[in-house]
Length: 259
Length: 280
Image (tube, rainbow over the protein chains, first blue to last red):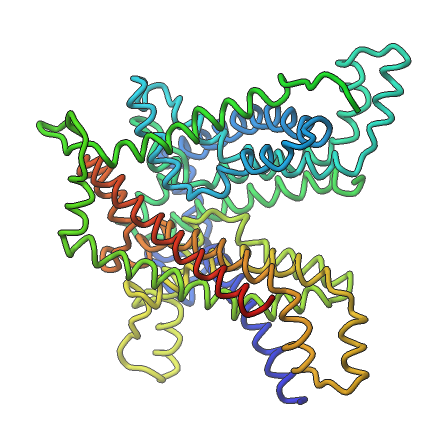
């Protein structure tokens, strides 16, 4: 029995390593001084970060992805919060339908949703012009995360405070701004961070709907990786990982403790 | 509470889902019934079953379907075997450890799928970390084939989707009252018996949703099989994207995607029926 437990513990440690290894290896590879991805690294160097900073394609892509993610998150936050309010406070018998509808983009395979959107935008005559299809796709992908997080923070709250404010003469808008909004701030923050990360990292939607011209970071990285093996891609990935971590930690510090 | 329902609150979200998810999906169904196009047009006038007939007639495309489903099933099984001990561990861990372990399990989700697949290419390549280490240790002389085959693809897919297995498992395991297990133990049941008769049956909803989630995600993933499998592992999803984007065969690609979706649906239903019959 002792042996069995020891083996199980070893197995768990191996699985944890399995989870972290590919990410750790990318970060380590980015500090490689050599021309190719070799292990152990041929000395430590920041040269691939310098190469990356001078590479317009990647720099453009990272800015493009950040702007796209910020815009998609902003729209999702508004629409998702409204939907969450309706779902928790007013949906009644239709609650389950509302929930399934809002989670559809998460449940359906992303690549199929992307293809469906591609056809649809061509059929209505817009095609991939002006990045409207790409943007719509990103809003769809991020919406469930805002909805889920805001719903969670709303469900723990009593509506009494808002009703009290309303009975004391506050308008609907004031009651929302002064009472509801501060209460659901942690949910908005978590949902917003999730939405941003999902949009920043998502592949299928961007791959199919990118159109011509600038493309989001995951697409540029994928295109690069198909033909190149230098550690520059690792440097790009490391920056992207750090970017994400900073967002998560910042949101946690700002709002996590209060929740 | 009988008040006027503020439908305006739900209108933007409902409109978005209706116009940009439901209508486009219906359109894919319609597309699959259109005729193939000519002169660079993605589809032609009229309707028919041409696209489906073509799919079932060409072995190149047809043979990828069972292979894709098989990769999905194996990936799901690997995720379950790797994920269950983890979920069990986290569910019973002390508060301090739980946060850290939870973070490790969730960490892959915070890193994009392209980067994670790239990490696997660094590990599994012919001159990658694993082969290099084994060679330096003198265990092998020629590199092991770890990439550009089903093995590498399943390994990387299992990594990418493991969190989606652990999270539902964890949710169902945390609902179990530890007192039940203790009671069974005090009545003389062995640890294994407690697991087999108490823990596992109670966690069955988590097993079900985790398996279904991972299976669906695995068969519809594109980047991981494309990067790890090179061009040597062809899945239906890769063929669908090729047909639609590179070859502009919209009705054919749609038909192929729908056949995959229906086959996956049948497997999911069979799985749900099987597991329910046994455990309820």
